[in-house]
Length: 449
Image 1 (cartoon, helix red, strand yellow):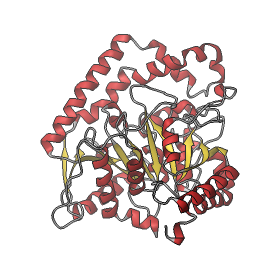
Image 2 (cartoon, helix red, strand yellow):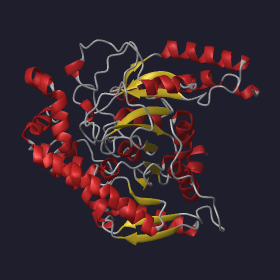
Image 3 (tube, rainbow, N blue to C red):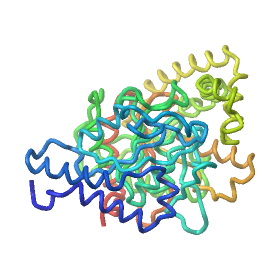
Image 4 (cartoon, rainbow, N blue to C red):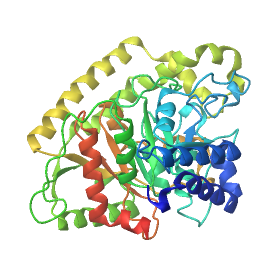
């Protein structure tokens, strides 16, 4: 072990604590529980053990924050809600958390979130709403539901966040906060000990600084390798072997700032050798509306929360509980028809990508900039902006695809993300491609400098 690596965990935890001290208000909004002294002691112990037996911890130097819907031994898994504030503490870590810690990550904090993960903008009426650090003109949301994790990573309070993703909860806040968020295929990471919102669509995910860090974590975590290995790079550019599809309906959905950023990124990717094709992708456009029209998430959320809603509905966030109650009205035939249609759309996606010879679908992560808190005071405005926020991300959940949001350009920390969504089961290939995309855009280098 080189001398500069001998105390890598201690230095990493100390740096994160310094960032918390530098912005205590942001830390209070993003982090619900902290274990500062315990984390420092654990970091010292890990460094000492690695000095005796180096090489056994692939995530040495990673400092971990865990979304409040995952079990951590001794902490209450309240999912950002006062409804569960008096619940029993978890008896053990969720398997995903345990696996990360065994790989060398040091647990430091529990991260804030939208109550029960039912919202894409990151609001929390009980614990406060984390704000994006990217746009300081006025208070703007960080995105959700994994708001605290994205802010914590963006501000260096942790460098890895465990999150859940139902409709974009790893990727939307990553885009709004200028970091990377990865939603894997179902089953890639263990989901035991994670509180569900929608069992049909929920997966554990990660937020980190960039795609390279997401790839590092995936290599330490993944229980299976990619079904589609990354092809060897050929030609003269860093993306010379990559073929991407841009669904032709997407650009009409974008606000002007996002459209300009997306167009600039596509030009830079083509200059790096990528082949881009704009194609009709009805399976991408239809997946979200099919799930919404069938009431899948509402029905499943109501099923999970019905006993508590029957006795404790008044304690739910007013923008969460009433929406869950609507799930009681979803007809069984509509739910089942939607599930059947999604299975068909998954096959259509696979066929379309094979026909195009494509490696990934490229879109912006979110069609707009982060809304201000003032914009969301009206409930109808909130519901409208909430639906827009996940309008581009949700298809990856409905079709069970790996998907990553990249910080498209960090030179000015713009709160816009570039999303790449891959082939079925092709998580490792997608992450490898994402690293190449970041290199072509120069965003990873800008973050390091």
